[in-house]
Image (cartoon, rainbow, N blue to C red):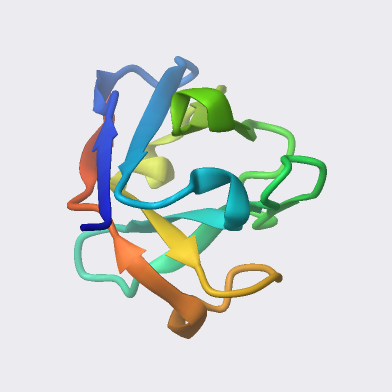
Length: 123
């Protein structure tokens, strides 16, 4: 049974940092590209970042480029999203997801999703 469980969200002040984790089980993480998405209140879900199966290729949405870093540890079955210089507009529920095949953040090509973790950036 495929499961993705996010953790690490919380309340942080603008300019602060958080690291999200996505624990994967029920499949071999090292075979799959993975992605992070987010959904803010009243907005559609959007792609944030993706990473290739080996970790050698990464992609970032323009809105987070230079501030967020995606990484993975296949031995620990975990994908991470380090978020620095957080802004109020980063407030959202963050989801990790498993991608079918290679590529970026085409949402329809992600087949399993976690339950999400809330990130709130506020003073």
